[in-house]
Image 1 (cartoon, helix red, strand yellow):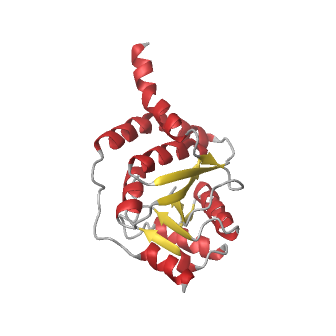
Image 2 (cartoon, rainbow, N blue to C red):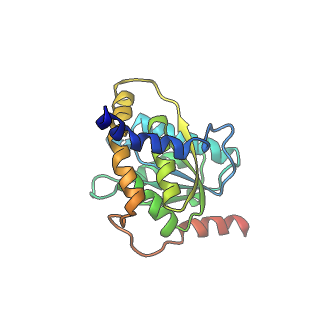
Length: 204
């Protein structure tokens, strides 16, 4: 019993950390930046799960609740480019290309949060992901010093959804370690001005 309690403590932490920071697209707070986490590609196109995250970001942009969308995902192989696929999808759904910024080194949630803060200079953001992942995303971005609110998009409760929910129990353990020890991302690199340039263009 003690082992079960200890195993579930990280999940309890993510729920507590995000408890008052979850919103729908309708009541999401205004923020200059939305962050969309990658969720895989099929034949070079966003998976249905990723497409729904991007749809939510486009909805927030059209509603005037966010000004810039930061897409963060995996581009570790030449033939696999999540950020560019996400950018193309958003551009087709009404978000101007100049208001989309790509993070090509968002290899996991912690890396994406740290890079949003340290590399792209984001101080406050609305995070967009599936409901089973959004609490962990909010908890980690908060731990990285990024004031965060989360929008968890709805999905059919299919096998992928149940797999994602089960995976979160184990991923929460790594998240708790990341929040406690704050490891450097797989790739940090120099600061980038994409977000500030996009915001500056709106002010001109």
